Each structure stands twice: as C-alpha cells, then as structure tokens.
Length: 158
Image 1 (cartoon, rainbow, N blue to C red):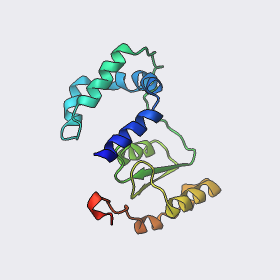
Image 2: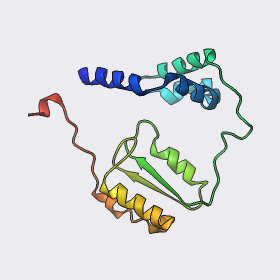
Image 3: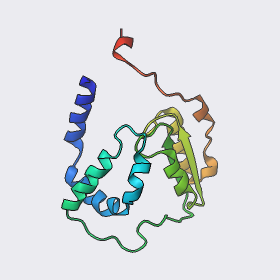
C-alpha cells in the first residue's frame, strides 16, 4: 500500500493537470461515445469511473474545436519504427498495429515490457532503424530472448 501511495504522490507531482485537461478535453473526450463506455470498461480494474470523471471534468474545462479530419489515420510512406510493450496499460499493442496499417514503410515490434520497453535489444533495433532509415534493417530476433523482470513482493525481498 505504501508503494501505491508513494507512486500516486509522485505522479501528482509530475503530472500537469491543466495541460492534460487542455489536450484530452479537446482531442479525446469529444470522441468518446457515451453508449460505448460500459462495454469498453467492463471487467477493468477501475470500471467506468475514470472515463466518467474525465468527461465531467471536461464539461467544465475550456477547450476548442478540432479541424475536420483530425482523428483520421495518418497515412505516410516515411519509415516508421513502432514499439509496443506486451503488457502496456496505456497504449496496448493493437494501437500501433492499427497505425501500421496506414504507414506503408513501417515495422511494429512487440517486446516484453510495459509502456516503454527498454534494454540492449531495443537499443540495437532502434539504432539499426535510425542508421538505415529502413524497417528492413531491423533484426528483431533478440526480442525472443527478452523477458519481463521478476515480480517483486515484500515477502520475496531478503
């Protein structure tokens, strides 16, 4: 419990709530279909409370309109390296997989990890991609050797 409280306090220190609301109230919340909230949040840890709180906050927060087509997929043939963590609670791998459908010169790598997988394997793939500016230059075989770190509990610490 102490770890959760400390994490929450740390997040509150670094999170700029005004900025978050300015962006999400303009770009994200208007695209939430109220009739889909229950289905999309069913079985999740927080249920629909977080979404409904965000919608309520945005009802009071100033925000502007978006230009037509703002939410349309980006289409490009520019080389793109997409990296997803297989246990990412923020941006699941299917987000990048969907984006890749419109990025004709992209590679999508799913690696063990959360929001930002790291390590020598990731570094080598990123370097290869940047050096060659080509998805074809990326050797993804090292991903198979990666593993999530062990889950540490109070009882497992000696």
